[in-house]
Amino acid sequence: MKRGLLVVFSGFSGSGKGTIMKRLLEEHKDTYRLSISATTRAPREGERDGVEYFFKSIPEFEELIKNNQMLEYAQYAGNYYGTPRAYVESELDKGHDVILEIETQGALKVKELIPEALLIFVTPPSVNILYDRLKNRGTETDEVIAKRMAQAANEALVIEKYDYLIENDNLDECVKVTHEIIKNSHDLTYNRKELIDNLKNDLKEYKKGE
Image (cartoon, rainbow, N blue to C red; front, top):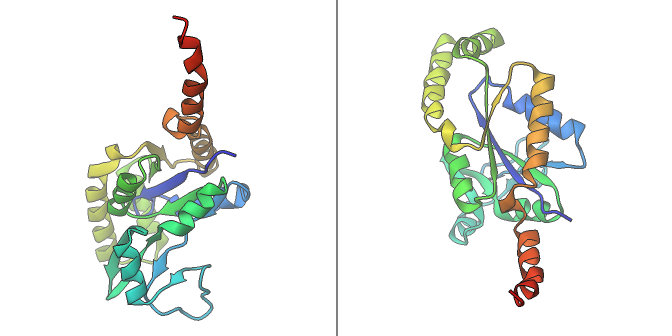
């Protein structure tokens, strides 16, 4: 059984990355698993440990950090949030492709720790379309939209560090292309190290007669 891939999604707010991920999980239930984050904030009504989040105390979370068991983490409003390594590794070992949605700084940190992770950045076809999508939500003030556009400008500076750039124009086509990219990435040489090593070892005896 092939080991699964860790697939890290980032993208501008309004790019549709969350919708793409939801469709992948719905259409390929046996293939994908969504990474579950850990947090030190208290559970909200209806939230279950190990489903929405892994709920940890601050000492527990800091112990995970100390033992290099967090792929990435950050602090917001006095609480820790991050990606526990154990859950991700467990699902990868089962052959599942694990989907992780995080911002660019965290994504690049994950790539340092797991070089074979597949980084995908999602964007609309143009900045004008990005702005229109944010505006047409009807849920955000002009001030918030301006902040999201400024954030997008910063995120654009690191797009070239990602493995793939997905242009989300037609959602159905975008989901299809994204799934094919992930599926084909299983056969990139750095993801087939075990097979390559086996081939090298088994072929050594044929070099003896050279």
